[in-house]
Length: 218
Image 1 (tube, rainbow, N blue to C red):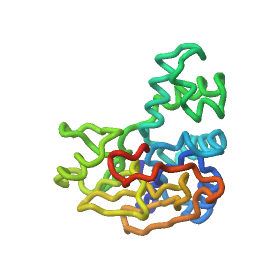
Image 2: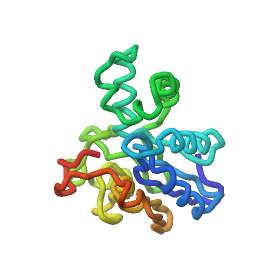
Image 3: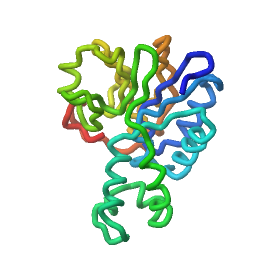
Image 4: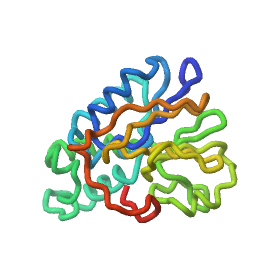
């Protein structure tokens, strides 16, 4: 789906930070198309409000919600555990906040989430592509190091950075909103960046004190 005016805003990992998302939506142009770069769920304090807000935007045609590794993990855990007895489910924050019935209701929606959004000269996906050109929801350094520009500019989230970072034709826009960093939207047509305050420091999720590389859980 193309934006009426040709502009899009790719939004980094929201992770249930609904208040930050509301602030961001309030300042983005109402006629531009939004692309959520995956990991809308988990970690943050207001997952139910957040996913309902994003799904409403998807339903009215204003947004595309891409699948992230957290959505994929929840899908796989729900499929593997047809009842609430599945141990993996109890480690997932979305399951804790929504409860068994509501989480199950979301499974069909989550299964419809695409892996890639393609614009003119750019694509958005959660983390990158594997060596065969398939979307990989967990990839990091191997994609950063070998990408040859075949898809144009690639906008990704997945790995939190202190600021928007560009490596060649890869733009990383997860700025760790759930960890107290800003929530970021990036316009691939103009390279404009819009940021709002993410999770307040006193409510931020603890992030392991490690270098922001492949070892960081995202």
